[in-house]
Length: 241
View 1 (cartoon, rainbow, N blue to C red):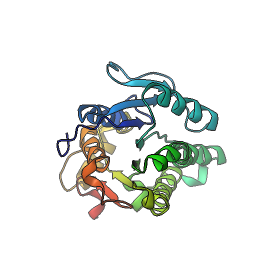
View 2 (view 1 turned 180 degrees about the horizontal axis):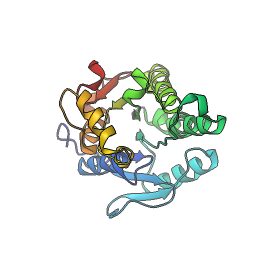
View 3 (view 1 turned 135 degrees about the vertical axis):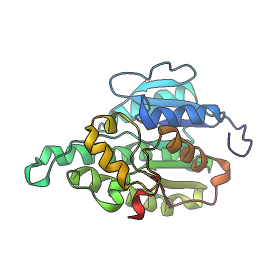
View 4 (view 1 turned 90 degrees about the vertical axis):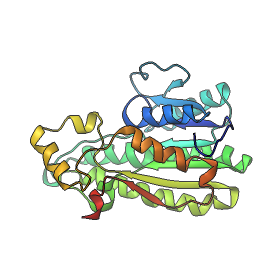
């Protein structure tokens, strides 16, 4: 719990059924928030205390239905963690239009759709926290991930623009750029690929989802009321170069 908070604000974590999203949801739950998570196919395992709602961030109607369910059950969303993401890796020379557009739709446009849906409630309440999950790939680029890197770079521009639009209503908007984190996405890599990544990390290891969740908890807290429009890298020093 950050700063001894006890306010049971309502938090929504998209893509909260595993990995970083589930870790963030659990962390917010421990901080006393009332937490909902969205999922597309499978709800999170052991979802005690979490409200799990089906939702597809690529579909505006689905987003509206999911947020409405959260509002009906818990109340207006005051904290948004826009985490839902997807990859379709491949070299640009062979990447199809669909592979590019689909990844941008989930990672960038999906975050916009959910933020647009919840921001009016935050504006009425004159308090809100939005945390977008970007990536170090969006800051430095990554071969074989032009679609993902472009989308995650766009997330930074989205977050910073919303920060300027919403600041007067007491709403902060920030982004987190994780590095190599121990998730299913990283687990799909071969041993050689993983070793090559770890070799570039000054701290010499991959990160844990809960280390990203700790950053989420801070940016979503009352204590972070003077932090907006920032990008927090949590990457073991990978982005130092």
